[in-house]
Image (cartoon, rainbow, N blue to C red):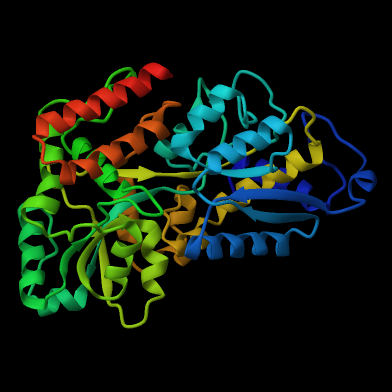
Length: 431
């Protein structure tokens, strides 16, 4: 065991209430006084479906092996989650630990709503040091001005699922790797099996049409472009790269028509789950749904390089400690230990499809034995995270709305990009 890991391990044992000393901000306290009762922590998330089952199972396991700490899981709907969490933080009723999407972190950091977990320039009130085995991209996305405000739990890139039975019936022997191959495969499935070539959402229902937005970002990144410029002050898609990315999306939906019209996110998932679509574009989080479906034979592959190099949109769930005016040191210590434990056991979270972000975890046999996870890991290693700006959530929703409208607006590609540019520019200016 490395020296740093040994020190971290010995510190974590303090939270178990089985040793005689608690380490906190360089001091110690009497164990008899601290161990009078179990430390209860509220952990807030927005997970649903197979994600929630997996997350709750991890919490149950943590509670089982940590008799001195009890994590109480609380769940809110994803719609309105950030607003509710911000309100709770402002009112002093925030949970002890919160799941926050990486792309939403900049807004929380700007508002001073999160505890600093690690600051190289000074000591923090949180006894946590990020282990060295975190993947650089997701970890650095949680760091602002040198300070660490959260730990990444995973990465979840877009991938391409495909029905192996429909591929066989359509006599498709090669998984598509280019745009031409993707269209050819989708047409073969439609013509020879009667199933949809590709299932991907293109209209709004419970969720916005986020898949087109994620796909648009991926197609830009494959050309070395992005939604915003490097300094996040201007748009980066009103150009040839943006025109090519948008043309692919419009072709899939309106020209080649390999994606059925009016397909909500839920309908696209069900179409693939029930064997009514040959290909499905979605995030790795859908794996648990498909693995639980009887008689569905499928596999997964990284999103094909449709416009250039290997690159794909990816999100990341992070775990953070909301700021409090008068924090309880015992709860702070226990929350830090819980966050570290969750990242150390990413192989359990991987059962929901998400990709662990610690190298020690992705080498575990328990992770490597899971189906398709090596594909997900390959996709995560070529993933590019969203721009780090407090305006991102609004920008992303606006892009999704613009792309949904583009599929029925009967406007030129340049006109669509001009409208999208105007709306995103207004959002940037408002922040």
